[in-house]
Length: 133
Image (cartoon, rainbow, N blue to C red; front, top):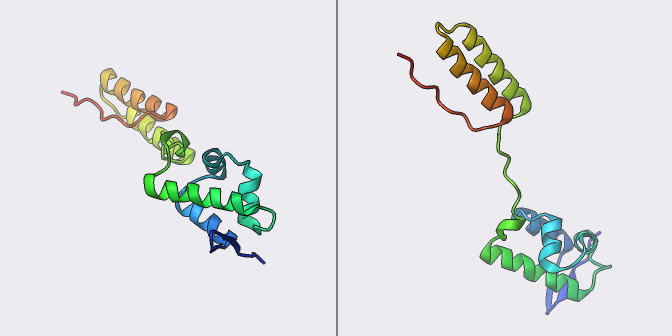
């Protein structure tokens, strides 16, 4: 059972610390960097709070307040994947493009479709094929 920890007259429920951190999309690693505390202290604060000093709870809550007010610094934001498709859907897309390449009429059309398939394989954003004459 989690126990509320009082800081500056306010009770902080450890479960709410984790919920708040997650709702702000802040990893424990990012919160540790913001607070200067080890990730083990962040984890402990989210578990039962008993093994974390009032000062550490205050530091964690202040860091979360800062993120809520100012956002997470760019260098701590989760990296966005370049390709949002799953590997399976990328393979299906490549297979469809190669089938299309087999149905093309000219070498130029085939080359354009194969280049699209190569871009999908390496995870580049989709490009529209050049119109054929």
